[in-house]
Structures are given as C-alpha cells and as structure tokens.
Image 1 (tube, rainbow, N blue to C red):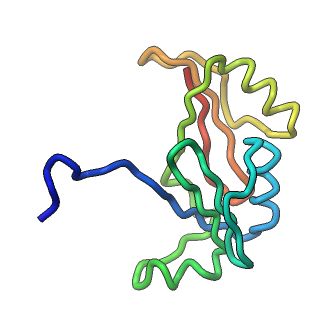
Image 2: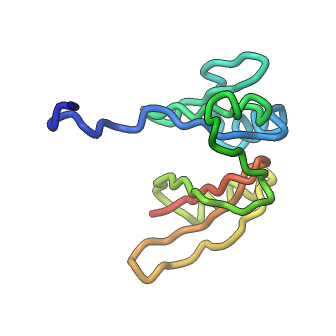
Length: 130
C-alpha cells in the first residue's frame, strides 16, 4: 500500500504522441525555448520545471499503452496543459512572433484568470494563464 504522506506524488513525466516528431521537437525548441533534455530516434524529452515532457513518435505508442488504443490528432483534444506566466498578453505577443497561431485569447475568464491557448504540431493544447 502506498505511503499516505507521499501518495500521490508529483507528476514527474508525461508522454505525448506525435505523428511528426521532427516538427513537434522543432516547435518545442522554438516556442518554449527549451533545450532537448534527452532524445533518441523515437523521442525527444523536454524539461518543464520538475516535469519531463516526452514527445514520442506515434508508431511507438502502442507498445506503451496496449491494449489501450492510440487516437489520431484529428480525433479531438482530451487534455490541456497550462503554463503559468507573469503577463498573458506579452507571452501571446512573443508566441505570435514565433509563428504560433492562438486558438483563443487573451481573455479574462469568469473564474478570475486571464488565459490564451494554442496547439502544438501534434494537436496537444497548451494554455498560458495568469
């Protein structure tokens, strides 16, 4: 049984599946300004604070999740990642200067935060918020 004082622990890694690993890797380098933490022919890993984001070519995904099924990027989004920023508008200006097309925002939400969102080449939704 897990120790109640340490369960659940922090999320240390997430694996995202990508049809075009090279394009998604380039997007993360350019848009987030992050170096590649680790890579091999099937994946590129980036470190967001204490969380590793592993971008894995979709062809390798079944070996991780079978008998679960891998959805295609056009099947719709079932996850959104949120990055806290100091200034949503300034971050959006920086993102658009880097060629990112915003899905929405910047906008003030009824729950008291300002947000905007965009997607990576694999279809994963990212939100900036303050």
